[in-house]
Image (cartoon, rainbow, N blue to C red; front, side, top):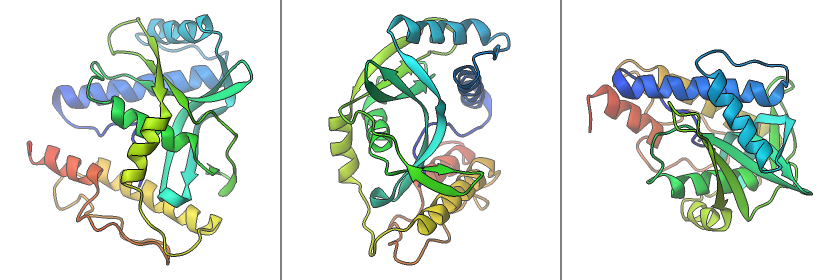
Length: 239
């Protein structure tokens, strides 16, 4: 399964907010990776405010580590962090959040960043190869909160120790050691399934679960993944 980050599309205000969030993430990633990049209106003012916020805290963004896919084979998960940053002589995982209200999301965010910080490998989609994940701080992570519609970003410190405790509660089990080849297949299947879920236009079109897993991986006992369930719920007009 993939880690959270993007939101599924849809109709109405929820769909509009999701598309706006995706646009902010795209502009933010480009601004981090390419100093010469200029965000388009109406995002330019907000993106500049976000970059200024990072600079005001003495944070150095590492352009080579923007929107990288990472793999934690023991937890059987893969996901993409927004960026790695350096402050002093330490590296930290930083994630951008654009929701209007994160009051009920901090626990989930802590789990997400804790998994990123403990990833074993980074996955190169072009080369289809794994490389070692840089050593990052596993005690704290950072969230840059950029509420949609306001040029007022704020930086938040996340307790990754507590996040890891939550992650371990739902940690799946493997029946054999993991190989880079198996990881490539897990990542590819997860990406394909997520694409099918987000593009589903009816209940029947939403995949109930990952259809193919490498030998030696135990399949989740759930009848459907959480993201697929959420999509089915939305397509049904509510749970």
